[in-house]
Length: 503
Image 1 (cartoon, rainbow, N blue to C red):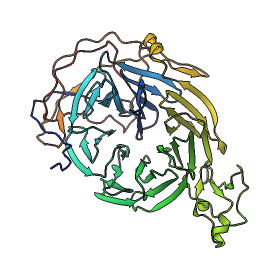
Image 2: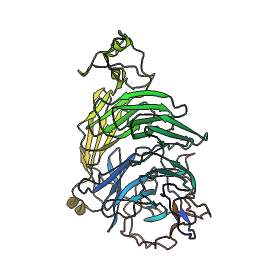
Image 3: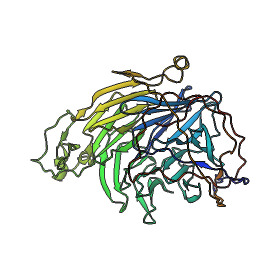
């Protein structure tokens, strides 16, 4: 049953063949951020990284766009003519399949429907329909996860069969984290009580309940292999890192002492570093390595005039730096009363300052680099090779005014400092696979692709070279939606002649 009334169930329709994935890249989960509906109309509705942080996707009020992170460049855009608002775009690494949810003043799709979009065919090949608004969607090669206000549904990607449903506390932020490691299926989400995190370890068939904070959760993140969990509460002063198997608290990282809204928490690929962004205008970078034992004589020199001191203890062969510590921590160790507890905390060793508005962040492909993307349409690449304030490497404005953007057309390149680059999209034919028959009746309705042929697309622009799939990393099986449980919309004609997404 569905006590919250968020599921849907309507009727059944036959299936049609579904496309195979063209190619797949590797690693980790995106984090999305949506525009505040109380603000003035913004052309940019949402922004989120793909699983390996090599790209980010923008939901626009007239379609969506894909940008490569390093080097920074626009790689693709899909523009819809009318009612084209996309409130959420979830990429599946770098392949042609995406999960789309409508948004903005004129949504392309209803906000209670998730569309599995094949951009080579320029149409939806499946859908999941609910009775309430979709708050977030996460993808991995074998799972589709949909977040509603009080429920999370987990589907198998290959046939959209419902595998699990999880009840949560009110989750208006759509908090969920999904590990992309093909050998380890881990999901983290809010529990049913305030401040608790539920970790589903599907490979070992067990759940872990972690009492992470006293206040309401505002951030949840998993590392790439699902062994570490980072959380933040509505207070925004502390980030805690836990072991997902045991629930043990491993690190307590202090962002600051003032209350802020945390926008993003992210690990780097090796889990040596963690970064967070907030509405305070600073991105903080922490070390997640074990802290070197310190006593009164081992404290390093204070470096920033705040009473915090740097203590360098990188692991063998690692360039990681130690977090800052307070020089007053020795007073607590001596048992002197009245010394506040926060002096024992670990503070960030590097910061990106003066970032405007709401941002998300991710670690770059090059060592000791971090990428910050803002809802104001800004991109910033910085280096944290040295502790303290990060060194700016490059900056870009990839979203311009509506009039400028309308004049620029499909091939427009973002404004880039110090350089600007443009890339042409290209298309590729897709093989088809027969769909399987599945009579499962999930609480959310599913719809198959239409069998009607699509009009021929316009000739594609010159193709970029396609990297071959690496051995042992073949594309996953094709999504073959089950029997529909809702009336399928008539096939839409192609609304523009743009070639399909294939980066």
